[in-house]
Length: 230
Image (tube, rainbow, N blue to C red; front, side, top):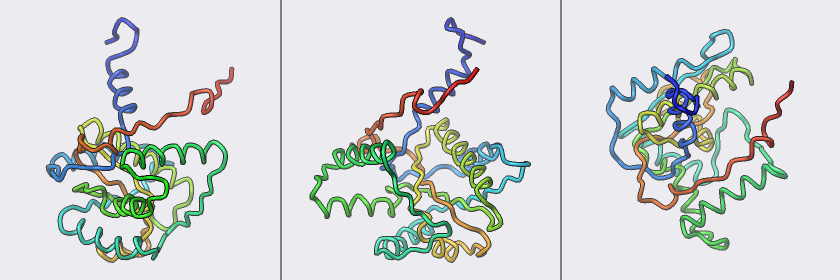
């Protein structure tokens, strides 16, 4: 069924879901029901993949396991000890650097952290390792034989996952830094060394009272990102 503007109701709803998804940096402690978790991950698994290989593997942690990993990350990543499966040496220049700086400024302003406040910046950094108090975290792996094409497949799966969460009223925050101590995650969860960790996503119900959750980073204008050819 189409509305008066010629846009289907399904398209309108999806547009709202996609545009409302944000990286949330503060969660309520209330855990999700197991049935909701299962439904969300079952839907996310319908993401596309090259030759239908489906090279993603999700490990969801909650409760005591989640707490142990947070404490371990604070002792390892928090003190500069890393074990990455995939090197991260990105150096942003030009417009990419500007976008990175702009969102950082917005975050520090929301947290009341000034440019010279080293302790405040340290606290903001450590919040990542506390999963922003989210009750759940999913660590996303792919087999060691995978390469960049399979990593793209995993990225599409992760986006499917976060949009499905958003449709269920569940907030999320994808975090590259949660892949900085892959050895600890594998050890804690009993995962074979042939499985390689890409990143993690903290998720749960948003705490709407936190100022850092009011951040709305600007998006690039369409002509900056897309060229239409006929």
